Image (tube, rainbow over all chains, first blue to last red):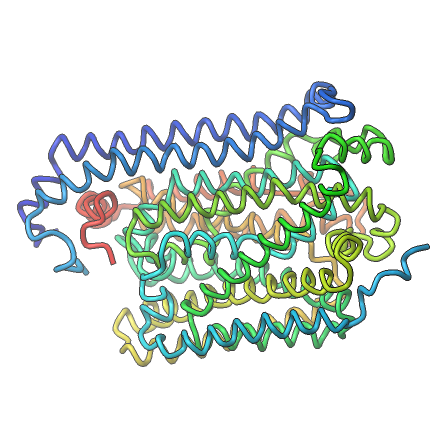
Length: 111
Length: 515
């Protein structure tokens, strides 16, 4: 926009900022890919190899029960992994880049 | 046989007492919240002062409906392992929500998801299209909740269907009208805690009977109903249909207006992120222990009795609660189920009202120039309109099989709202024409394909065979939403939108200038 401040423009075009955005999407798309493999892998396994999931691991317990539970637990672990990365790395970099935009946030609600 | 033993269907003293306690508590919260609800920021977004743990509970509360509590317990009780497959599908959208849209959504928006889609595009057409997608999703969702509520309350308390629907409508309107998002959030928090507590207690009482051994519980299930109860059955026989359902459940979450709206109640992106982690934890825990309740009911109560009380199995959890904890515990669980419905309907109504008032009235009609008082007044009128429509639809659809409607709501959310939302966040070239075509194509195609699917075409309209073979259309309609959005963007040109995309990256990724 015309009234874009120079320090905004500078940060926007800096390699640090571009690198941060690229890194953010690399991490989130990689985690999304793992999630898809885990969940749709489970669904496809049910549809194509019922015998495997029906195998017993106890008196009556089948392999399918811990696998189903593992899908839920893994989904949570992936979420937690993202939060740990974002809190430790992403937020630090965000704070640094925000510092470079003088005057910073709250004083202007761009619209 | 023992069916006479249950006091389900009669308003017992304990059920009524618990019910009145919960309603009194939530109305007290509403009274407190009403005094803090004066601006639109408070009405729609609770003043952006909700803490991450609170928002995590509220998100979980919005998502853990009576259908998932009673429905999945019933499904596990009657169909065994297949119910567990269903439970996993309901959770996996949460990580996807976190990875793909949670933070940009928080940074770019104000009150509704349409704020994000319309952010750098032409307001009027995009607001109207987003409101259509959002309101369609909410209407089908609320209709399913209302019909479910009428049936459940009639079954549990012996109250007439119409009175039950009307009671839900009146109480939840009180929450939303007077207390706005602050009251709705706290009602969700109270309900989520009660639900998590109730289900935990229920699972523990089941496990006590089996010496805290899951193996013993499964053994009992197998010896009574055969090993097949612990193996995948007929639920996932067609992989394409199963994946289509999975896509709708997973990515539909990313287009549910009442869930997305909660991200504006927290102060910043970091709080949004933390609240998703809490929500995923609560919901994951809930779906992990629900099967214990379901298996427990099938062994301790028995499938015959569960089916006799309600053919769909919805009363499995209340029945096992009565068996293990007596009438008081049944009363507690019944009251919690009712509170669950109230809270979910309140959340849906607030989201519907915000689409009508914030997107249609403030931005499409008044072009963003409505006074604060006008906005609040219209928001309350819109709440009333949406609430009354919900009650009328609930009564009109009495006795209809509406189980597919939640599926339809998720399909529209995944095909209409989600593609436009994601494309507007990640694709610079995405423009006004793209957004409108994406939302309308995805939403309308999902509705049309569901009508032509076996669920409606064969089961309800009694035609010999379905025109469209899948029960869930998402695998076709969601790509269609993306393709329509991409094509329409590529054949039209809107240079301003693309320039603004790059300029607003500081807001998207660093939160500079975020509301």
